Length: 306
Image 1 (cartoon, rainbow, N blue to C red):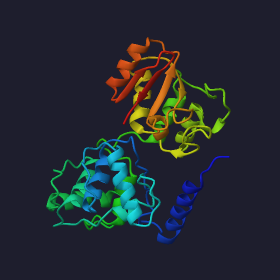
Image 2: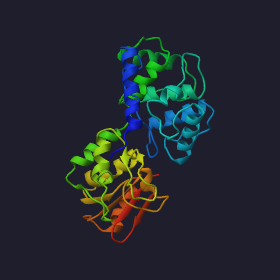
Image 3: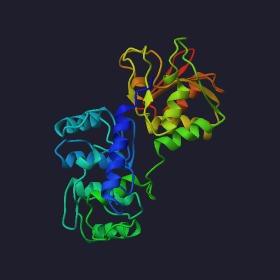
């Protein structure tokens, strides 16, 4: 049986907030889930906000173990489930009001978000006239009060939107593209022979396509867990097919039985077999697309994105 209770609770709470707040409020967009393995402006925003809250984090746009640990610490201190991912319950406590005259890391976070929509601001932590005017323009275009104050409603619209200046493709869209790509086959059973249909490569991609977490195998070293698949990994997997033109079979992603500290269990790795190119070529291509761990395992290739 699949365990979706945390996601279900978050969805119910979000729906209740939407009803209570009505139109033009923070319910106008969906708070995204940013987790280990993600990269880009959304991650940089999280890191700036963590710094603002006193959790020293390098704002490099890469959500790795260090950022995950800081998020977990922030969540624990704020009465949240310390799962290390920034979702609908964590964002509202993490964001901070920014307005004309504001300085520091929260201002940098707001500037980073506004730049996702093409405003071209200097991310200098000085929320001056140019930044306030950009905020007003964004608010006006998104049905918000155009006062230039980046409060909860504006934060929600900023981070919940797709952006127009490099926000990147979302996790669900990447998974859908992988599922539809004829060059990528997804195994519907486990190479171990143990039956656990909820954690196969196909099930992991289907769940991600549907906007939920992927599942590790109930027989694995870590047992059954829910993990968000890395967008960097999904993007790399897709590019192997679309840019390199390789055909390959994905045998395991988060599922299967691996060493207890395996990157598979963090949702940042996949194993491939039956490639149209040799193992060494496939390994090299994984590294070219940002894999920090690419191994020729003989009967398959393992690629992971930290």
